[in-house]
Length: 331
Image 1: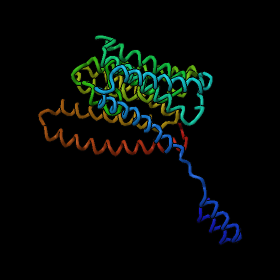
Image 2: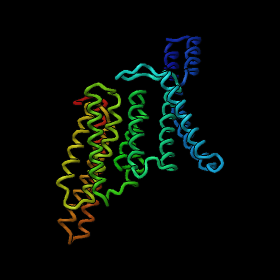
Image 3: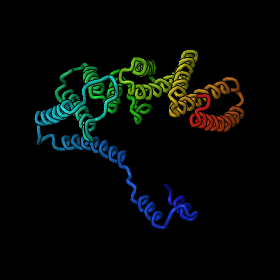
Image 4: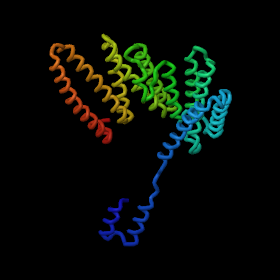
């Protein structure tokens, strides 16, 4: 109840002075939830701890010794998995709640330490030799099993990232474009499309067969970006392959548009509009350049005009979709 509303009731004589003061005191002492703030701090704490251990080891590696470091990481990792397994809820294909406030972070820390353990083994002792795929395949399998066994979305994201790394692509938000040479290797573009299809199928299967159905959003979230960026890069860098990559992009956008409508998710609608805008913009400007290659200034003016008009149209489309989602009209 707002303070102004309390004053309005008091002014209309519906509340006595005592009741007004009591309601105002209750309003002022309302409890404020710090749930998400604390969860964010705990996640940051796990990441900082993992990164801090790596820095500490790197700076003192000459005095600590490789075997001692590996033993320490392995022991701490084993303790995390032991604790997580001891306190976990019985396995079910439905969503399960965390047994306590720390459990999620212990699972995440254990998985991060396991990745560090395997990476250290390979980096220092080359236990997998030149078979570098094994150094990413084994953590990928362990992470997927851990994600389903412990019902952990954060570990699932790590597993999907590891899956892409195993196939040769970095899909973290900071490295999706900067660390992949899409323009020089067509293999990476096709791999991105394959990963997008696999993740889309995994998301569909999760919800269709009710096997950890709440994992489907995470699968779809990675898939829409990886597939659409792969298709766009195919349009941009592969000469004469528009007939292959444009239909692929259109099919993906149609699927994720209807998915967004079905899930009432403005996020997926936003992503489809943005990727459609980029793809359509490229086709329009590419067509102008091809058709008017002798009119350089004309192409420039038409391109600027298109960008202005299309930006306004995209903003209006997003506002329209947002209103429809909120009103549930026709969606």
